[in-house]
Image 1 (cartoon, one colour):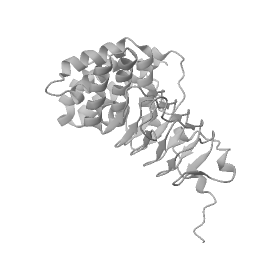
Image 2 (cartoon, rainbow, N blue to C red):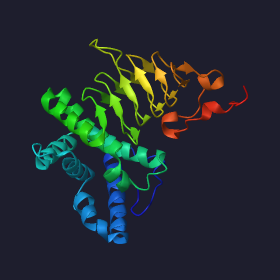
Image 3 (tube, rainbow, N blue to C red):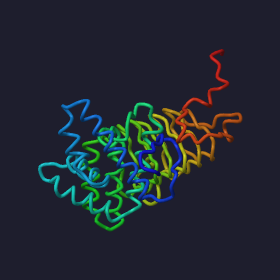
Image 4 (tube, rainbow, N blue to C red):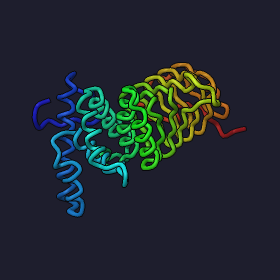
Length: 289
């Protein structure tokens, strides 16, 4: 993209080059931080240390997560090196972080800037920390992966097992109380609200957790249990308890969850995970008994 040209966060990416996209986003974040530091001098030192003093997005994330997740026995310098080395060595992690930032900015009307998400959205931060924990898990560095999971749970109130697989463009909106089991899989462009559980049905081992397709929207307080598939573009209503497969583009609500009858059950045109429309299935709703 030409220098100086701006783009709305929901506008499609104009380049297939992920490094160019990451550079554009990092420039936007630094510009936002400079404006915030000028308008609110009390934040100037904080913004300098977390964003403006760093040369790249991955360095900023590594520094911020290191300080957020450190403890008296798990030093911030150790965590900084761990996060930076992992992000720097894996282009997929960097592109996922970019996609997650864009997801929050475009889908959450309360997200006023990319820098606000980077610094303050614990769902975003927990997701990036989990990506590193999952990388450690796949490298058979499981004690460290589990220790990191424990710190993420303590600090962010988000408990994602390091074995769980996450796609790109993930939004954990509010994020408090989210629980994701070891063999769960979450696709691309999925949006999950607070107090959602992707869990098992008992103590049996093996592949026992939900598989969430691309573009799915899961409402607040929903519970999905067992090795069940939630089809691409499906919508799970708030507070629902899902124990069986949900077809693509379907809407499931209730406890136990049932598919909404009518055209919305199989012909949702929008991508719920990106539109964030929780109530389209209520178009024919009536309060008349």
